[in-house]
Image (tube, rainbow, N blue to C red; front, side, top):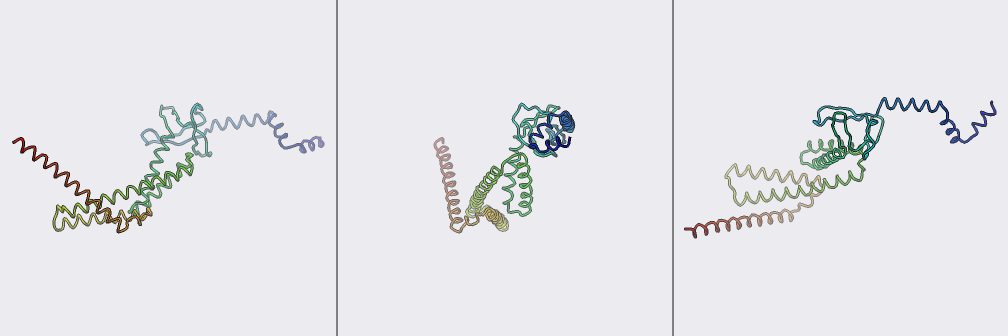
Length: 249
């Protein structure tokens, strides 16, 4: 018996494992573990359609006839169908949810460049939370970096557009006025404050060197030209209407 045991231990480990799997005891243990696993289930937390109440779903009971994605549960990352049908007829499309979270992530990235320090910090926390969720849902880091880059590019475009609009309004105020005394001074103060906020955001976007004195002057000239063309267009419209009424008379 001792010689037999020694010979068995001297055999390769792979052969010992294969022999063990053939025993009734091994099959009984595996069946028991499988039964416990099925009874316990792998539960994923979600919300109802209204987004109010939480409910749980056992992904071990889901159909395998669909595309799969990965989600993280208390037992680790598992595969679940991309579209999940619930007992109450609810349907969850994880891809739609991912796209929504991506939009929230990009919005948060843009808000991190806000001139408002508090808003910027809160947006930073939202951005980190959204990035974590997307990572858990299987979005690769490269895609997150692309989303961040696009969000920052959009923020730059928006910043430049806001500066052009603010300079246009400032030039229009200087030309037309419209108010007098303290009212005009207050309107100028508001536009000056908006420009400071835009420049603060530009600094956080690392494009503060874009707004040189020459660039600001160029934007002012373009704004003045735009205002001039608007006046010319208005003059032509008035002249057309005047000629029309004179001819009718």
